[in-house]
Length: 116
Image (cartoon, rainbow, N blue to C red; front, side):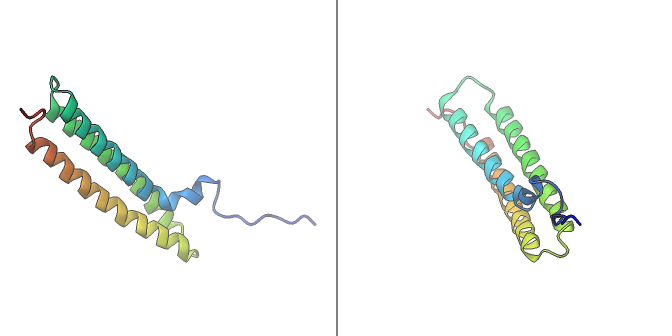
């Protein structure tokens, strides 16, 4: 009689799933903050408002994708309290990072590029 390994919910990516919203939120906010900040400061000849809005929307899409993965992990964590905690924490962090990206997007629209 062969011993069967316990099923832990699928492949290795499922271990990362509860943390996807946190990781995606951090990466999106970092990329949006650094990219738009440098662009507004060092590249004066571009349409800064369109770039700021485009990067903001891209960051929100990345955050939404990470939050969706964490939400699905929360639904699959009925018998794993640590996994449910990580999913909830990740969802809250994704919401916080989404607000951060919104504030930075608005600030990029208010602040003129390449001040004199």
